[in-house]
Image (tube, rainbow, N blue to C red; front, side, top):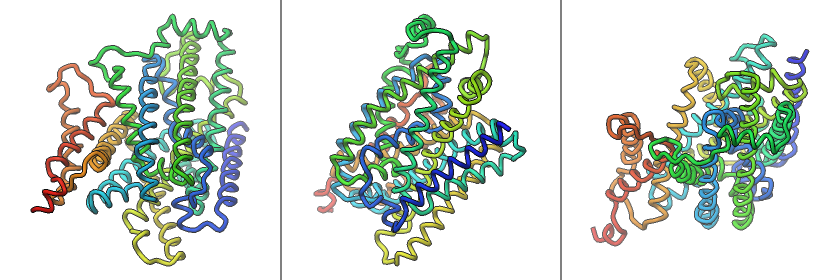
Length: 485
């Protein structure tokens, strides 16, 4: 009975999203799908981006990090905060001044067609892998808690979830995503608050006692002072800043929503409000992790970090709270996938098929866009099945490493374009952007032989970007020299 209720709840939730899609996509054109007609309210974009940034991985995994390393994760969050200001006051002015729909068009105008194609290609690769990992992890949880008990196999669960996402994103695009993300972020934050308060009450402590106990168990420690460790403070702070610059400011999914706001000033207000709110929300996730750790310790439970939150909610809280948790989990899943598939469709249509450069009718553009959208849904499905076949939790770490490697060349390309006026002297940009991740992989793979006990952390993204920048600089000339030759 309870499992049937949860399945029915999922259908109702999808029905609400589909209704929002239907309402927001009336009279929508292909350009509306890509840009939202530049009419998205900045405050809705700011609020909805919280859900997109956190994702189901954050919802499940971040609370479990407290058990092993206290608040060390918050060093990374502080880095995010700094990076968002670079996005707001360096990158957004460029995108608005050039009136971009795809941010990778900047690379074409500044560095040429090869840089443009490879920049968009790195985004497509990284988003496909990153989004499907998030999708796979959360589908696994839904399969365990709902669908498996109803006799529905994993493959069918995957098809159902992806079909739901395609149904409400196929027509409306960005206009729909802005509103659905707002709703889903609200549900996710509601679930977070309810779970925090529920476990605090189960502990039988007031908040002063909770924080006193967390402090005495070293679960509030933010700073890691050992420079050899991967979560050393400056590695996390600088790495977090460049992660937010690369994975927000150089990411079509995140920027597509920002540049759908009417004016640059409103887009900047969106980024500032979003960055401040994210500090608070991540702190709440870490408070939840501390409370969960205390509760597990109080009951002599030993759980893996990623199992801590879902298992305790299912086994030790009332069913009503578990229902709210499932709603929050779904709400964390959908924004990280619906925005990705919409942005991938936009990037492929504009950057690969050249929608902005070819004279196609609106009907033809709509048909092509829908095929591309369904094509990415098919790719998502295949990748989820691939991750399931591997059945290896370490695949998550591997994919996030790949994300760092793929955003590194983007960071180098955009930095080179913005910080210099140099031009390429050959089409070598293709090989240079491939060479940098290979060098970084070698550094990481042979780190023990080369650097002893030093562990690479989030600084790998920075190193990747710097190597790309240096290689681009070597194979370029100042405009005056290029003209003379």
